[in-house]
Length: 596
Image 1 (cartoon, rainbow, N blue to C red):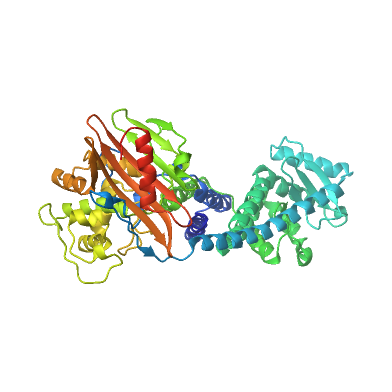
Image 2 (cartoon, rainbow, N blue to C red; image 1 turned 180 degrees about the vertical axis):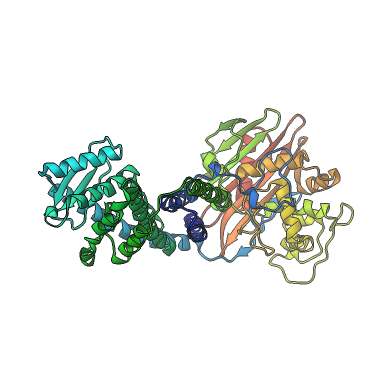
């Protein structure tokens, strides 16, 4: 979800900026000028993290509670959707129940946020293009330097810094301050008539400054900064950080120049920069170039640093590297945070593709519905999948979640296999069949919401979360925190995960009590025909009065095999668990698995 990516970016970028500013303040005397600037490269690295694919990030489980354990079989489980219902052991099992959930239009919110971000990014892009075009105009206006002494100074400066690449030296009446720019072809450009007010020593200082920018790849860094400022334009801390980064870069460059000069030249170098103070009032800074000039406030800061310059000691250098590495560990430590938030992308990415999988075209069964069908043949250990993309798309489980809610209630001894009747409290329900006492079988058959909501209430969210973690149930997200987290809310699952979890449930890979597993199985049985038994649970997601999500999940037992299935369909309206059931039965019949 785009909003989630922006939120992740805002959080990580803000934390990183704050951390770097804190490190700079705490260790100002221990950090050399070069390493104070290098710290900002950690920010550039952190800005990439929110856009790293979730499967490449370290597990977000570092941030989850340790109350639960991963699935014993190492598989991934399920995620689900809203409320719906199932039926009984006769013709009525095709009846389906759903409860309307009122939600805000998240698509509208996401679209609005996207539109605002695009507008801001577009404006910043226009400014970046304008800066680039300005550099092109400067490039076209550049004329060669004719003064041989100046050319010799430039060559000597390159040799002093061990730069062998061909760099074009020129002059232009479009610049007021010396600058270096260009990725493929680099230019160092001096203002027109520079010889009239700059000494040869000034010119050498300028060359050393601009060539140090080239040597340390600051031109490339300019483009990265502009790119990230476009992406993160909505975060004011990024603007503050990049302004500080540019100042630190100039100070680091000044220190690099001073390191190459003798002590008597320090003052002269400072005077070279002061020459440009009177031009700061008309200064137009190009963020794609490195230029000697800057605002008067920046130049004042640089002059103070030059006046107090001392060459870095080996101890300071070692301390600087140590502080940088520790700060780098902090950046790496934020990656699981991005992984946790990336899990909100509603996509199951851990399916074991090494298992035998057959993709099938079953579109004729789905008519105009978007959806997926997943079938696992236990004997052949083979998955049959229709619409691979949709099969890993997580949606709300709705009433299919009640399979596991019932199991958790049994494990917690809230209900037992002998006593599982809960009295109706008299609150009027949307269906007559709900307005009476319910036991485990009738509650599952009729998909009685209040029955399972009472189980949840007595169990408590902490216990529910522990069970979801234990069986590795989908995104395991019950952050909605009320009794409808499985009804078109935060808890989500994909068809593939539904099937994986049904296998684990059927074979009791999670080491629950066998009698509890059997009790839920018995309650899920819909009908038996010719020695084959059909077990299943429907689910219908109704949001703002529209049926948008339909589920049918379960398994078929035959004399020789067991088949696990999950069907999910989605639409703007008019989908349901009943429709998903009809689609499933038609497929199973044609595959000669179950003649319903």
